[in-house]
Amino acid sequence: MAADQQNFSKMISAQLRIQSNEFLNSRKHANNLADILQMFEAETENYTPLLLTIEVIFTELLKRGDLVQHIVPLKPIDTSPEAEYKRWLNECYEAAISRALQCMKCGRTSSRLQALVTACKLMQAEGKYPLEPTTGYYFPSVRLKNIFTVLLDSEISMSSQIARFQEFTEYRDVQQHGLKVLSAIAYRKSPTQIYMQNFLELLDKLMATEIPTENKPKPKDRDNDNEKEMKVLCAADGKPHFPYNPSICRRCANRCWTFACLWPLCEDSRTHRRALLLLVERLMPLLNKPHLATDMLCDSLDAGGPISMLALQGVLELVRRHNIEYPDLYDRLYAMFEPEMFATRYKKRLVHLADIFLSSTHLPESLVAAFAKRLSRLALVASPEDAGALLQLVANLLLRHPALKRMICCEDTPAIMSNDPYVMEEAHAARSRALGSSLWEVRALRRHWEPAVSRAAALVLRAAEQRDRPVDLAPDQETALFDAELKKRFKAIEINFIRPQSLALPSGERLLQYWEFA
Image (cartoon, rainbow, N blue to C red; front, side, top):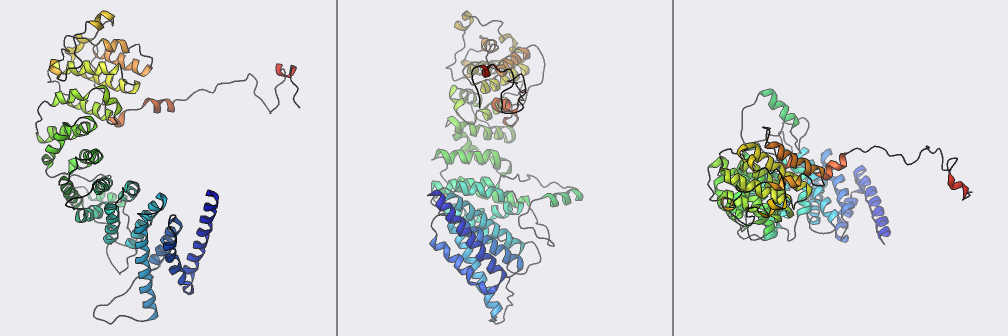
């Protein structure tokens, strides 16, 4: 059945290719275009061949200039056959774009993605070869507005289509005009959860390419180099460069986030997580008034779980750069380190942020000792990769606070383990009695079966004796153990003393004494 459908699809594609070539080569086959558009109503699932066909046809027509209409104001409409033909082509062009936008919401997933790509490619072709004569740079914002309307107002999730749209947001003109269009059409008084998710994902993709935070004066030669390297979707030969303005992008991004703050983002965990990721990773450096996000971040920090781990990065930004105070911040950070953290995808982010929070050398010794003890205890039950990251953080704490070297235990006997005064269940670092304890866990992990964990434990023991620089624990700089194993090169292992020259057995093989091979 699948083979029959594939053969039928190939036959349809061949037929459409013949019809499109006939239409582009001769006007006597103009009805082929009407037949191709009519086929959209007959098809119900696989629209991909039809979408590719209209993309090829109208891209070529735009390149030729067959869709350009020279309209002179205050003059009667031209009724010549050539003008009538161009008006008919423009009607077909509008109908084709409308069909592509409809296909983004129905049919197979592959057809939906192809419909988005076709709509964007036609938008690109129209930007390079406008429907009306222009002298400067031109971007068809109306087409982009129609695409965004479909992506936002759909009753289903548009995650796959929006993810595919990211390949176009790398272009600066799409980013700038996209943020302008989104800030103009996105506001809703009572949006649905699906609408909010689509809006946040689309805004995240538009912000994927970094927007400069300041307009610093640059040398003229550097500006010229940036114009040449800047990716522009609708760039055309012989026309001015796109006037990219970062301040417009920042202003529109602030307006989009203002709309989002009016919505109930915290009711659904998925929407809440998406909003926090967008805020802390993309928008925080661009906000005009970042302190207005304090309530949302503090409420999220009190929520617990992965939500609090994401909010921690935003709170760190507010504390470091905007002098916002959060009561019992270190106790909240201390309580996040529990065995359940290893089941979340943000555990590396938490370790990195904890390293930043504990980087000051003026913190109380009892507080740092509580963190070192808790991290060492969690390393006993963590996976090898997580245990290595925790031990590295412990080593950084000992390097910054040499007075804690007295916690290094020379042995890990059962008596020391059983008489440990540390209270693991205590949520407040100051009351955990960590200063009276020792880091016997590190000595025990020195004999771990995984060499990487054993080396990390040895690094902690060596940190108490040497004055090395702390290691940066940024998640992007960590190498997974699995990836490291894949990169290892193994020597070729010989399984035969004599290199075989053919499929026949070598001479002297004892197997030939008992078996005869024809």
